[in-house]
Length: 208
Ligand SMILES: Cc1cc2nc3c(=O)[nH]c(=O)nc-3n(C[C@H](O)[C@H](O)[C@H](O)COP(=O)(O)O)c2cc1C
Image (cartoon, rainbow, N blue to C red; front, side):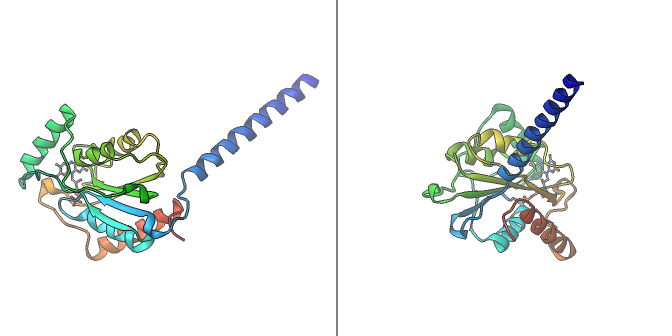
């Protein structure tokens, strides 16, 4: 009986430790409130759906918006860009960026937005995350895609920013360029996405 009681006590105390760990992790994944001049919103957007989401984030929490541009832009043709991105992903090529961010150290929270490309993080965003030291900062991913989800992209953000806090990312349906559907973030779809963004920002503690 005595043994059973001490065994039960052990289980109960272990559960307490586990649950406090879970709680600690929950709060670790929330963004600590920062002033808007410490927020940077970096995004990659070919057909401008992700750009609209970036604007919604800025509308809610403030910050500076910066579009990622390449030294050598991708081809306009859809098939050509798909092939090029597949080759870059296969070889690990990181396309050099035209966009340069001066004094990134002033930012504490960096939202990184991108479409899903080939079910991965697009190479230019890999270049960005490789180029800058984001240690100790909070890096928050957001995404649009054609309906197939984020693939490995959110995990890639975590891997490329190993010393950053990475809260839950945001994803929503954007265009389907393959089927000729390019920009969709207007009218009802925009209103719907706006509500989704607001709910997510509240959940991660980035807005009231
Ligand atoms: C090169 C390329 C590859 C893509 N690969 C995927 C994919 O693997 N899965 C998916 O759901 N959508 C894919 N898409 C569609 C985009 O993710 C989608 O249209 C997104 O909303 C585009 O965002 P943007 O308007 O900000 O450029 C791809 C688009 C391009 C151009």
